[in-house]
Image 1 (tube, rainbow, N blue to C red):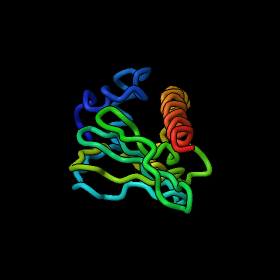
Image 2: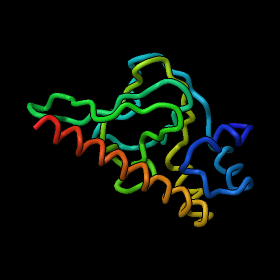
Image 3: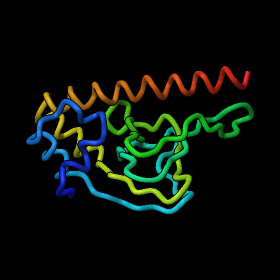
Length: 149
């Protein structure tokens, strides 16, 4: 559990939450530090965790020509990985791994969805923020694919 909501406040997906609501999220959040090369998500596998990058960086990749992995984005502090943990069908849409030692705030997807069900206001506000992340990430993939054509 995270005890200081200020750690969550830096993530834009929580911008519209008040302190009490942010405390509800903090109760199900934990911090993890991983070395370079740690796999966070794998395309097509069950999405069980939402990752918030606190320090370090993560490379996001998708299959390209000949099924070779193509890095489509490099994200760092303040970014979100694994939105599929809160959006059906709950399967990761990309693979990701740490590109250097990285500290993450990790949220269990099932517990976060339970929180959203119990308090629709929190769910709506957070999912609005995640929608912006999805839009930006899809734009990055589109630009990367257009560049490689």
